[in-house]
Length: 325
Image 1 (spheres, rainbow, N blue to C red):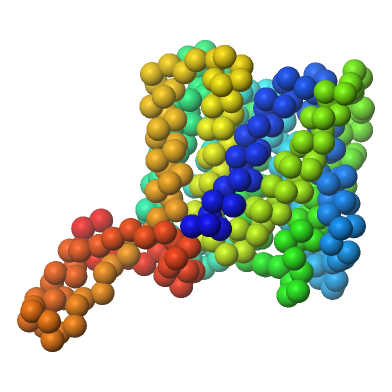
Image 2 (image 1 turned 180 degrees about the vertical axis):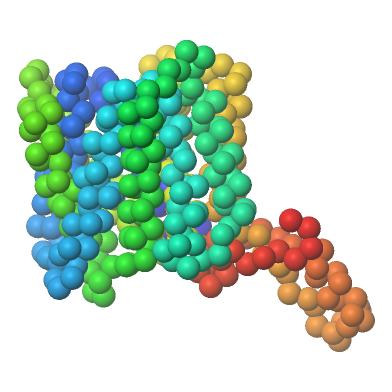
């Protein structure tokens, strides 16, 4: 449970990005903010860890950094430009569903109907929070939003598959990927935005928050959690980002939540928590107990329990629950 909570800090911190961007950073500088969040933080992490990739980890770091950061951010911002924010956020919330499917293809895991179902509930919850009645749809924006979620989902899944090289810490690993993703962002940022004007002390503080806390700290915790937690359960923690963003809107910006939004908040939170649990079958009691041998197995077919997935470990993931589903 402790590892789940520390990993959850990453998407919780990412949920502050909207508030920091709108309240402290210059307008029309989203790509520059993404670049400053990734590249300086990645170089600093590599400098602190004093560990460089070796062998095939040079290209693996480039692939993972591109999928998780370098490709994900431009697609995210393109979707945000072409779609209402609520539509873009809802498309992003579909990532756990994609991860559940990719885990079957890439990792060879059995499809978890439990987490797939809660992933759908999470999308519905986020949709209720952020979608408005006047949400317009744009084909380019929709493709960008879906592609961005798919890029991050594939990046998360491959991160789980390849793991970390032996002897390499989470800080160094996060530094590799942040640096790779930041380098990928240099050209599109220069072509699309350049350096925004009006960078003041508040903006510098915002960039420091995004780089040090939202970059080094958050990605170190995120990749460390991916190494030990079930991949789909970890992806479901990403629902914390829109929840934190909505909560800060209420607490800091004075926004109010409607009844459907409160319902959506509750659904997304329930999906997040339930996704960390795995249904398992209780072992039948010893045959020397009060029940006869045949009766023990019969009772075990109908009795189940949910325990934290990290307690079970990877070997126990997605075990079928006997009896009722």
